[in-house]
Image (cartoon, rainbow, N blue to C red; front, side):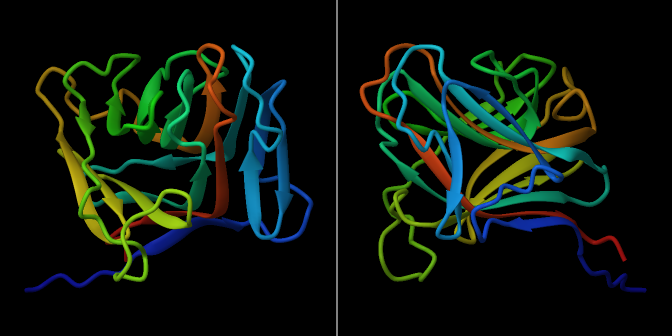
Amino acid sequence: RIRASVDTTAFNLSFEGAIVAQDKIQQNLSTMTVTQGSGFLQLNSGNATASGNAANIKTYRNFALFGSYPTYAEFWLREANQTATSAVSEWGFGYVSGTSAPTDGAFFRRASGGQLIAVVNFAGSESGLTSNITVTNLKARDGVSAYDPTVPNHYVVSMGADEAEFWINDTLVATINFTSATGFGPASNSQPMFARVYNSGVASAGRRIEIALVNATMGDMI
């Protein structure tokens, strides 16, 4: 027999209006500000550049990362000053706080200087669990123009039993296979969705990420 199944949405949040839905997402701010307007939630809306400044949001809800079918974290977002040095931005599944290194998860990282990296973090260790993403020939959401991080793009982290996949605008850009040393990818199979910006030193410009929509989906569930 052929098994047929459909995906099930577990969480969905857009950012219309001016009031942040703090009943659904938690904000953790260190000098940086978060504002909402024109359909976007802006992290570091004040363009803070001082060392140690940070803005972090996460869902109160955790999402199970099942073995035999995938769990997806989806973000529709745009960036500003993404090439700023001494500034880092991250989004996906995981546990993070302030400017500290993540303690677990699977997520996109825009590193200091602008390199985009796929990351799986196992209990604080990322050894052998990162992949640089090449976006030279990547298309925008319209499938015609070139990828531009300053306009809204669709980012997906897909977690399965043996690997994490990273997608941008329906294009697979990285795959990280889990090793026998880690068993599963992250240490915890229950993760919140998060996004953050922080300054690891005095940033050359105010790094921002602006989020239009987040979605968590359980794949092949029903």
